[in-house]
Image 1 (tube, helix red, strand yellow):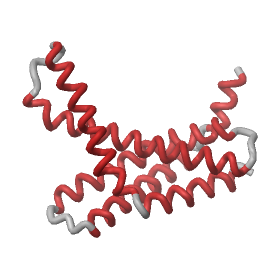
Image 2: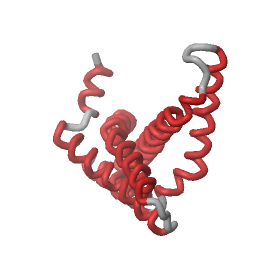
Image 3: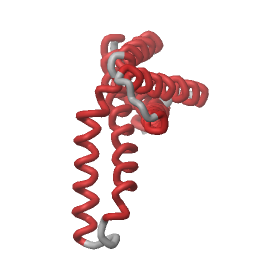
Image 4: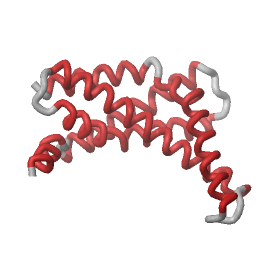
Length: 164
């Protein structure tokens, strides 16, 4: 019963979840856009796809990260709330964006994979996913800097202020 009550208290309100998802998704998409703009990407279609991927990852991650931060910092000091929000929002944003990237990556290579649910297909799915994770870690995470870090710091500070 206590865990259920703590979870209920940690959940963001519907208004906060929707507004936060929109703002956080926009911030993550914008930081990817400006990073790609500085890198002089020449194909607008690919820039758009990456920006949408980052915005979607951020939008879905916000309510999950906010709830996780609330669970980790419940009844603790502002410093703990800041740290919990910082880690939870960073982990959920990067994690979900990586997952969406891996799903898109896998769907692109699916036509060259073996018949579904065979042993060969299972190996192909696992290794395609691992390659996607590696590629995102090397090429995708850098798109969060510096704008995503600034947004993360500001959002974690706001969370800590609200939790006092």
